[in-house]
Image 1 (cartoon, rainbow, N blue to C red):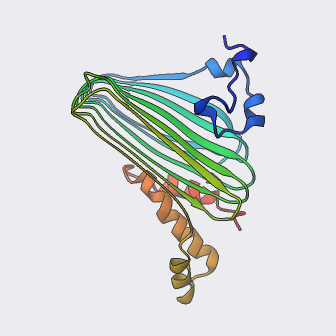
Image 2 (image 1 turned 90 degrees about the horizontal axis):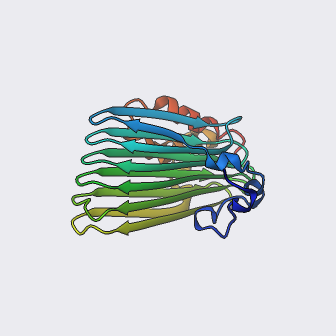
Length: 248
């Protein structure tokens, strides 16, 4: 059982950007709870997860992906209170993990995705694409760790994070971390943060498109990258754009 003394703080690297007040209010017992999911060798499984109103708080998933199996997780974090999705993944030989994540919303909430992907065996692959859209004084975070074991040769792993700030006062943070002990691997990560493309918005407005519709189209295109590997992303895109209501 986790004791009160063991509650995380912003001094802990993996909680550096979290909301201090929300951390202090966490249930100590909940920190020890994980949803454990195991994929058998060769199995394929996809999960869509929408953490909107009523789903705020801490969500922890631990995935074990067997040899040749493929696990895909697509998630939206849009609740108006502190929300954290934490995912730990262990990949067997030739396994694949796909993450498409979006944090989106306004107010003053912190929404964050934290991943730890362990390439334990050779020839495994992973791809993580996270997009963050915030306004007001909200914050979107992505903390992603890739660990490649000494025997995990031929690993191919990638992380991509982009943040879009719709208002001054909003913020986003990214912390990629690579721990590689094998020597025949391909690992890459990238991060970029910016504001809405004013030129594109002006172009749309000049052709009669209302400002709100133009903004929705631009945001849709921005977050669509996170769901590019999803066969039918429309429901997820609609859920993400539903959080745009109230954006200035």
